[in-house]
Every structure is written in structure tokens, then in C-alpha cells.
Image (cartoon, rainbow, N blue to C red; front, side, top):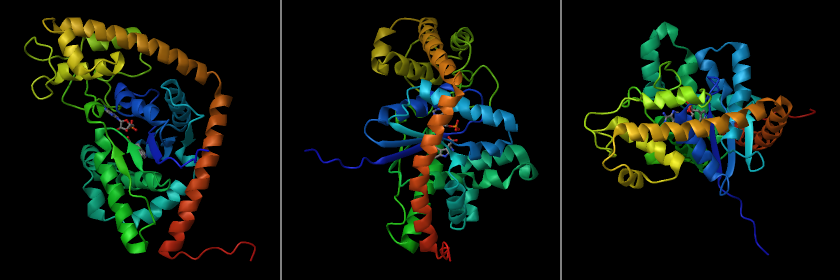
Length: 341
Ligand code: AMP
Ligand code: TRP
């Protein structure tokens, strides 16, 4: 007889803030989500409450939430092995976020670099309180599920650190078993995919230029973006992020799609030119996108199936989330309602 031990839990999410995910989302997060499905109890969500911070058109947000799910599935997240749900379908996220916000320092939240960057661009009047408390909601997402591990890209490291600090602070004040203190799962070699045009900047959803490769880009257009990627001075194809950020980024991407290590690729391309690498990578990426997009379209053609996956996911997530909220409400001293009294 084998004794089944519960697998440690994973929680992660992406914002459905665009029609398409980026190559950065795919490499930095989605490939990891898929790889971890077998050894962990995995929960992956569409962070639609977070996406509200950019004030989207209501109909776009709704459509993008389904489209994001279709892309998770096409990327290999398996609804039989992972729990897939929409953040707003589990009201406990907003409930726990309030409790956590009462434990978060104003200055502490103000030190989040993503907030500082965005609010500096938008000015105080153009910056919402939602953007300010965004990392607190993210902490609630994670702590609700007692997640042990959180697979994300490098840009989320500081938000995870805040989550850990909040968990530890609450444990000290309200009992060590209030929260599981989560660890990040940030795989250094792939945790930051850079912009194809500005290879010292993160590839981001918020740029409009040719530097961002979208998973739903027309494959030929995507190939063109790779071929026109900015490369560096010199000719040698070598992984050296400081001296050769452009080429190093292409090697990272190629390594993910070819399954070859960066060292193997360096040997393979010794004596060749940047153009060779770009042409080969463009072909591999275009092939991947063609296949990926045909899967996405099959999922999008069946919204009832997508909604069924989400209904099942929300029901599972709510059970875990409710247990946490009840525990935390009790610990912080909220009077429990007397049902039927
Ligand atoms: P977001 O699109 O901001 O919701 O991000 C979803 C996930 O993708 C998070 O885990 C991010 O850290 C990750 N991610 C976003 N952009 C990149 C990038 N350029 N390189 C690596 N990971 C990324
Ligand atoms: N803030 C994350 C991002 O922009 C998305 C996110 C929301 C998330 N909640 C989360 C990631 C919980 C991991 C765990 O990338």
C-alpha cells in the first residue's frame, strides 16, 4: 500500500490585461507552471482584480479573462492536474486583502519599485489607491492557499518578499500557524526575457513597439520581430548579458524552444553570424506560435468548456480560501456571525 502524502501547494497568476500573453510570460512563468504540475498541488488564476488597476474597458476585460485561460491551456496547463480559476470568482481574495492591508506599512507599500515606477509616470492624481495596494492583494492571493512555492518572473521578487514579510509578521502576532511563509520559484536563467529592441529592458505588456513578442502575433510578423531584434557590437555569438544583452536574450529564448543548453548553442554557432542565429530562431518561434495559436483557437471556440473549467476551479479554490479567511478572521478578533441565531 502506498500512503498518499499531500503535495506542497503552488499558486500563481497573470493579469488578463491584454488579448495576448507575451513571450516573457510564456518563458518566465508559463513553462514553469507546466513543469511543476506533476509534483505540486497547483492552482493558477487569472488575476482580473489586479487587471482593474489599468481601468480596462469592461467588455475587453471579460473577453481577455477567457483568452488568458485559453492561452494557459494551450501552453500546457492541464485542468485535470491544476486548479484554474478567476480571482474575482473567489471573494475571499478581497476579504483577506483588507486584513493584510491593515498590517502593511504605508512606507513599506510605497517602497515597491513597480508602484514607484508606474506612479512616477502617471503622477499622484493619475495613480489609484488600487495600484498602491496591488501587492497586498497579491499577498492575499498567495497566503489564502497556504502556498509553499510561487513560480514567477524576476519582476515579482519584491512583491513576494512583501508577502513573506506579511506572513511572518502575522505569524508573530497571531500564532505561527496563521500562514505558510511562501518561497519564490524564480529560475534565474529564464526569469527575465528582455525587449527585442531594447535588450536591457524587460519585455513588457505595456510597450507597443516591435520589442514585445506576443503569443498571438501572426507567426510571420513574429519571425520578422526576431529577425530585426537589436543585437550588439562585435560578431561573436556568446552568452554575456553585460556585454552582449541582445545576443544573450536571443540565446535564452532559443534555448527554451530548442531544448538545448545555451552552452550547446554557443558551440553550434561558433564562427557563425548573428543573422544565422536570428533566422533559425525566427523559424522555431514561428512554428511554435502556429501550433500554439491553433490550440488557442480550439479552446476559444468552446466558451462553455472554458466556463466549466472555471466553475470547477472556483469551487475548489473557494473551499481552501474560506478555511483561511475563517481562521484569520478569528485570529485577528472579528466576532464570528452566529448562523441561524
Ligand atoms: P503579468 O503579465 O505582469 O501578469 O505577469 C505574469 C507573469 O509573467 C509573472 O510571473 C511575471 O513575472 C512574468 N513575466 C512577465 N514579463 C516577463 C518577462 N519579460 N520575463 C520573464 N517573466 C516575465
Ligand atoms: N502581480 C503579478 C504580475 O503582474 C500577477 C499576480 C497576481 C500573481 N497575483 C499573483 C503572481 C499571485 C503570483 C502569485 O505578474
